[in-house]
Amino acid sequence: MKRFILALTALSLLSSCREKQEVSDPDIYALDGPTDTAFYEQAPFEWRITPRHDYSKTYVLKLFMSQAEYDGDYMGKYKMHDNGRQTNYLDCELALEIIKGMDAITLGLPKIVYLVGWQYNGHDSKYPAFFEGNKAIARQGEDPLESIRWLMQEAKNYNTTVSLHINLFDAFQDSPLFDKYVKEDVLAKDKDGQLIKSEWGYKVSYAAEWEKGLLQERIDSLCWLLPIEEAGTIHIDAFHNNVPRPYLVDGQPKVQFDSPISPWHGHTAEQDIEAKKNIIKYLDGKGIDVTTEGVWNMSIGNVTDGYFPMYWHFNSRQHTLSLKASQACGGNVYGVERVFGNNVNGEQLFRTLPDLDEAFPAFKREFCKTTLITQYLNNFERQSLITDQNGNAIGVFEKGVRTMIRDNKMYVAQDGNVLAEGGDIFIPAVWLGNKAVVAFSEDGYSVRTWILPAGTKLPRSTKGWVIQPQGRTEFKDFKVKGRQVTLTLAPGEMVLLTENMKK
Image 1 (spheres, rainbow, N blue to C red):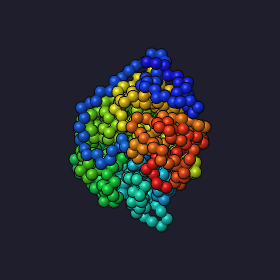
Image 2 (image 1 turned 30 degrees about the vertical axis):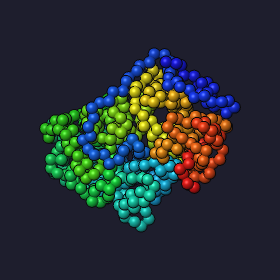
Image 3 (image 1 turned 60 degrees about the vertical axis):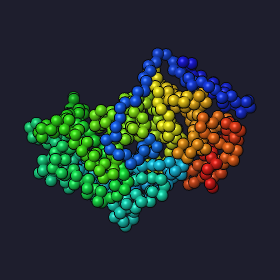
Image 4 (image 1 turned 120 degrees about the vertical axis):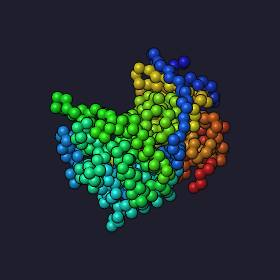
């Protein structure tokens, strides 16, 4: 495999003063030193549910609305109940402004937003109950649940489905359901019959709750309160297969994962997982997909089980090298698996940058460097993953598509034509058809020429648009000649080139 040399890019593509030649070199990228290659092999796969959304063609994010505070009265660190205070980040009106701006930046790409901290005092408040809205996120003078309904309805105008982030595992002492769940004996207990204190409160035994019909009651009540069935999706946080249980080492708390969930009840680990399957199937029967937090300790079991179409935290080489993106994909992707695609973490971004004048430029930058690329890559079959000992990697796709992560920068090429290198992006907006390309530059450049990838066409009648959260304005500093596109971009500028977009 040939060594990757950045000068190759400059020589073959960047100069606008020379005639450009198409490079037929699918091995444009290479790594230094010893490498390992893992080949993709499609695993037998069968959906156990009926997905209502194609998560491989959708940008999925969470919006963190509010956090319930606590005093850490268990081992000085862990939560048993709220302390009555909360930290608020967004209300429903501000959430809609974010959704509007994201829709403008993402050019109408389908989106799913899960609201975090929508209930009671915010995130991780009052579980296992989730029957009241958080007053802090409501529109002025309006019932919080009515405000959430309003947001869910309004978001549809911006290619966005709004649903909820919930937890079925935690149980806190101040929950309206706590005494009932103790009486009904559905909380996890150790072999001596004592309630198990966990990393976050006590734990619900899925199997015990399912057998007594209480889980079904919770889901039915939630669907009665809010139009979750219409949204067709919900995110279940901390959907663990075992209990994250703290213990002390030299006075410092550590966490171990214990299985089965409740030794007192006599359910096996297999029965705990079977109960999870029943929960997912019950929601599926209502037309609701279940996405979950992570592939580790939250999956049903076998990689091919087909219960979860999307995982929020995704770092599974087994999934990426045996399942298509349409069969299992991730929100935040970690490690070398990022060569197959990653996404902007909107939850973290809008939480840490509540001023939208700061947040939107950051979102635009990260969207172009991650999600835009991922939407393109999801159209190609994966073939192999090449890694070295320094955390660098190459993703090999069909049709000459190659990606590389080197020194934490992302590179993309098709048949040797560079489409992304670090902060400079020239990627088709595939959800708009085959006559739309997005160009972005983090630092800006003058008179750079790119070559259109195979299957993408830009006729002479192509229009250019500068993309901003407030909308788009005309962009003229570009030229299309055959498959060559020459343009100049200011730092942080994102433009759409297409003949399909009207003013």
